[in-house]
Length: 280
Image 1: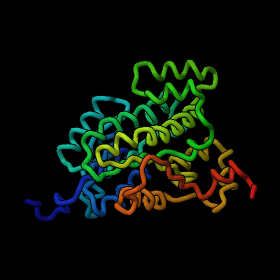
Image 2: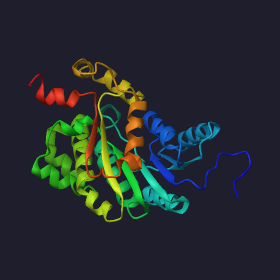
Image 3: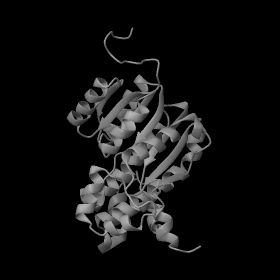
Image 4: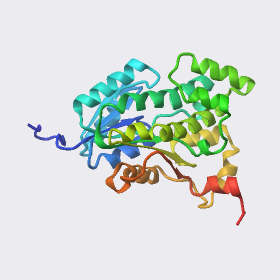
């Protein structure tokens, strides 16, 4: 029986939102209009604070502690989600920008952690469900070399970060890690879509451009050259977290039922401008 005075909706499917930062919360508020929410974050106090705020606004939301670099944490999150299911939607929003960690940390969260989430959730999601992995337009900037691609196609193998760091050599900084991890994340969603489809599931990545988030503001502070990218954006502004949530909502819905194994660029036209300039 539903508790009186709460907004619990046991009749709704479950959405798991991994990452309770600014964009994660924008996504949670949008998806939570017709899903129960399991909000996961490395910082449980932060996640609980956000979940409590959601409950105060009428959402059915609970918090869970999960560090995506910890296999046991990810397994526990998947188990909790399965128990609370059916899990219809997975939104992996967590990620490190270049200013938030070193080479190893960025690779560990952005592709190793993301792949671990994908591996844990594919077996437990309900048929008809969708997983959306937030990536970046950086994933469209530079193709992977065959050697790096081979390593990042199997990011859960032992020692992969050590091998990758050695292969990249002196260029193994956080910016390089960000480019490699996002390119690999987009590739992961394409490569694994067939396996997900066999279970009646869809898997997509979503690549934002310059978005007005706390993480984005930090990057502008640490890397002033990003102002050149803003000036080159055809729509001539940053995107908003609400605009990203709009696309996530669409991708998770039945309206996107034939979209899988691809990346959706939401960048105001910037990637095309950088790649093609003024070419007709």
